[in-house]
Length: 499
Image 1 (cartoon, rainbow, N blue to C red):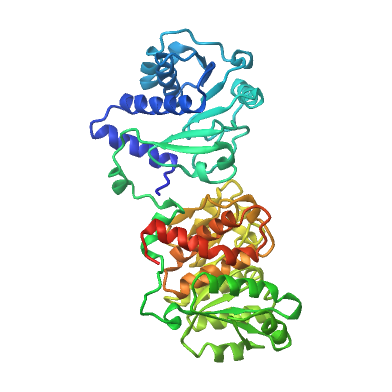
Image 2 (cartoon, rainbow, N blue to C red):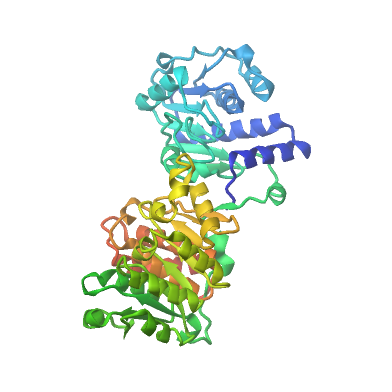
């Protein structure tokens, strides 16, 4: 589950070496894991290793030697002079008993497989010169590419392309994933990611104390709400979704349906009176209440059983929406703010953040997409354009005092305490109108059932992605709530929960 920055991974290596495992032993294990992956990718034909001057190149030399020992036709292209290699990389090169080829595109030839061992995950400057030409040649070659640790040209901590990057069909990394394996565009370049055990004891994580995790069920299993056989609908929480005016009611209904399917015991749509008939005609198990203004909304929230509120989907960008948000925060309700609720504070985001921080124990989740994010966090987006998505969301959570969820194919959830998760299970067809409204409702359902805000957001994001996978290509937002029962069954089976 843990995701390590390049700095944290270097520390894991140092702690392991300090505990008595030689660095070269780690390199040998890494290279052998690469060789094993190469054997699985191609059963026959020549293999070319493109090696750099650092430890990534050393892993490539070990892999080449292992493959040659298994009878494979292997050649090595080296970025620098062999004699200039240092440390463990030099030791690994001495284990390669054959010549190295000149570092140019023509030396690649027509192999069955290319092993990319050029740059490691620590690359932090643009690729130029000969490496740039070789990366272009590798990508144009047509042979499948197996990347060592991370495709060359990808920054391991940010996932950014540093001028150019290898397109791999598979990547073998070591001990734990890095943000660059999960964040776009790095994830797209990695292909399948295989995590190899190279002898680093997991106990080093106790000293490193990573704050970034891959959003997988194991990371939030103990917070996953499971209905009790002796429970009742009120025990599963009551969520309220605020509807917009007559012409924009569908988004609220999508959120309400998502909340109900995700397990909220009751869901009510707070609807303007002129939209009441439309909402009532389109909803069955979801209740509808006529609420026209913030005063009436406050009276509705006098019922303490209505513990979770969603404001934003189709709500309208207006003072009315701002007033509803202030009312929910003043009532200290768990709150999901999406879409129009976020844009309504674009002119004065600090007003929102101050009230979030003043709301005490209220659980607040903000769910912007990339277009909405800079409306609330313009300085984070504009003053630091090179920041990774992970860094931006962390900064936004600290600034706002809320859990911030920045949507996309690599949705990131971050909390004010610095914890963050990166999702990697969303298929491309999830990018469809209304999908975010359903997600807002799902998160509200998990808040209503008692999950902490960070975990509620993570559960919602993961299940949202799995629902899209379950529905398949051709998905529309209305499909997402309807396939959630299958996603629940899969989770119950995985967690060993009887149903």
